[in-house]
Each structure stands twice: as C-alpha cells, then as structure tokens.
Length: 369
Image (cartoon, rainbow, N blue to C red; front, side):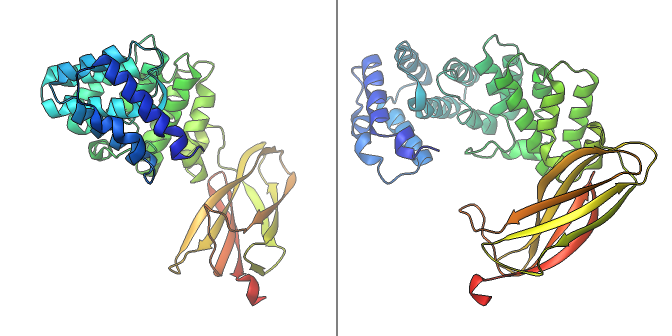
C-alpha cells in the first residue's frame, strides 16, 4: 500500500489550493496555501482532516456558497484523485452543520456528483451519523442511478464496518437497516458494485450472522448468473466460523464421517518454524459427501488466554466408503500482522462446520530448544 505522502502529499495540497483559488479568487485561502508544509508528520486521515479544515476556514459563508465554489472547481477535469477526500469531507461537515433539509439533501447530491473522482464513502458517514433514515432513503434512490460509482456508494458508504472510516453507531444498533439497499444491488450489472454488496453483507458476520444467511438464501432463491459467486464471497466469514446454515446453502450438508487425526509431526515447536499435521477422512454414508475442510489453530495470547483462528484446507467430494488424506505445513513465523507467544497451542479440524479431533502442542521460544 502506498505511503500517506504518496496519497495526500504536498503536491495534492497544492493542486487543491489552485483549484479552489481559481473557483473563488477573492477567498482568503492562506491556511490552505500553507498546508503543504504542515503535512509531514501526519497520518493519512489527519492529512485529509487538515485540508478539510483549511477549506472550511477559507470558505466561511453559507452552505450554498460553499457548494457553488466546489462545483465550479469540479469543472476542471483534473479535480480528482486524493484531493477529493478532504473536499467531500468538508461538504458533509458544512451541510450537516447548517441543519437544514435543503443543505442536507444537496450535500448528499454533491457527494454523488464527486464520487466518481474519488469515492465519497468516508464523507457520507457524517450524514449517516446526523440523520440515518434520511441518508438511507437517499442512498436507496442511488441504487437506481445509471452511474456505477453512485450505486456502489449506496452500498459501500453504508457498510457497518467500512475500513478506515468512523463507525455509525445507529447502524450497529439497528441490525439489518441497510439490507434494503443490498437487496436492490445484489444483481447489479457491475462487478465493482457487486463486490461491495458482498463485503457489506459479510460485515454483518461479526454481530448478526443470521442476517447474512437470510439475505444469501433470499438472493439464491432469485439469482442471476453472478449471484452464486457473490454469495460465496459474502458468506466467507460465517463459513469459516462453521455456520451450518450457511454451509448448507452452498451444498455442504451434514455428513457421516470417520476422522483420524489430526496427527502432528512434533509435540514441541520453536517460534519461527513450521508444524506439519495430517489427517484421514472417510465417508461412512451411502451418498457422496461434499465437504469443506478447515483447520483451527488455537493460539496462546500475550495475556495467557487462548484464541482460535480458522484456515482453509480443502474442498472436495468423498465417494461413499472412500477415504482421503490431508496434510498441511503451518508456519509459526512472526509477521508484522501476527505475533506468537510461547505456551500451549492446538490444531483442530473443522469439516462442514463440525469440529473433529484436536491435537495439542507446545510453542516455545527458539532459545529454549
């Protein structure tokens, strides 16, 4: 991923200053003019906020005046990219601060106008927090837009757990309130939009997995050529969590299995090395068993507690009376995103959402061996 100064750096700030100065030559934009020298130590979001505040300071009039300046600046085809983030953020702040329905509605409209230049998904959160029902009603209208960027904004901007964004508590307190938007978009012509719909539905897995399964089932009852792929992506978290209803939707019914293992190649493993495990799975039933095989690594945490993380292993079909063998090497090398701690650990198999067998081992510091 690019560094913050590659996304919103001095050149971005200077481009924004030139565009706004051209649209409002008499405005006092001294703070915006000075902003390129103030970005150095700031995070990406802090940089966007600094430019947003410089815009609001330099254009202190009414919302209508502010929006007029932004629309004039947007006539320049170069008014796009990361400079748009602070602009849409400023639009949202100005519109909500004015506390009028006309400013609110026009502010949402302006976000839709700009979202094709850089997604307005972060800025819309200000509107959602100010008046969720009014915002969602407008977003529902966007689902009928001819512009795929606007349709995606309806889904992406209203996600319960949109990355990099502020939370909207009322969305979390009213589970499923955004599902009508997804119902309108799951058969969208654009893969860009459908991907957002799948990620949005997957967000519910954290708190209300039943909503994920119910929506997926409804969509599979009225599918198009892309629905199966979308649903599989939307169900990815509840599948990893072993949700049997979700697995059944994808054809992974309960199976009569005999499982031997997992068997580990060592009982003690230094941090930084890899563990090999194996297992044998036999279908005792009279019909072919379609199985999704995962494994759970139970980690000891820094505070001594234990937490499990699920990993994909294999998806296959086992004929009646037949057996398959599975084998996997799992690395315990420390990464920037994952740290390991000495103590008891375990490997456990999960097949079609059912746990089979658990093998314990000890993870030790490399110098202990």
